[in-house]
Image 1: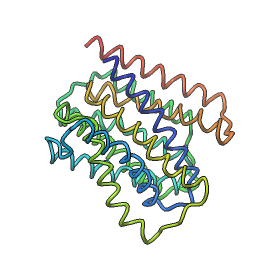
Image 2: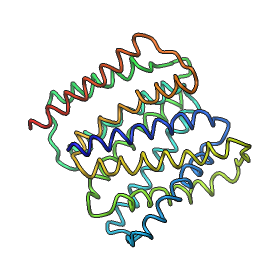
Image 3: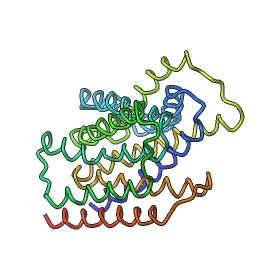
Length: 277
């Protein structure tokens, strides 16, 4: 229980750094960004599996492939939404994902959700809106991409839970990154832009931060129930805000600070309720 929460917090921090990197590399096509994000992660996964003599194929092959396909779709949709929307809008909509995860878990995993938990999910999402806000000046396809990404991400949470401890977390991540590398590698050829200078490092760093985010999210989902761990993904928004202040000198209002407080309070209350059940 405690380890799952710690793993999810580390994952949220790593994914926040990934979000900032994607924002910085806005001139590159989404497929090229996915390609480098996967490539950087594969530098970690394959050596680890070979060194530890862990079977790369895994045990639950069908679920591993399904999780990889769904995860890739969610990633492409989210990166696409970042290009069409402000970061605040894209991230805010994406964070409906834990709510979809809870719904999927209710029907697929038969996990019980207390009515009060729905209130906590709602207040946490309201906190996200207060933190980043919505920009409806360009309502359209970007919002559809972000919403679909949230739905697919919620399903990913449940699929990881279904895989459980039958496969090593690194096997789960390696499947995802291998599929992403192959598919995006083909799709990005037409849109390829040769990076210059620091852009090479930034592109490869996406894979590093994405790797740590993915592996710790996988560990967290395997350690505890989806309904408890999935809502902790909201913390990523707070980390993204802090990184934005440091790197892009973004300013935030009192409403934003109150949003962070509402998110944290909602998550703490949710943890307390689940621990008592």
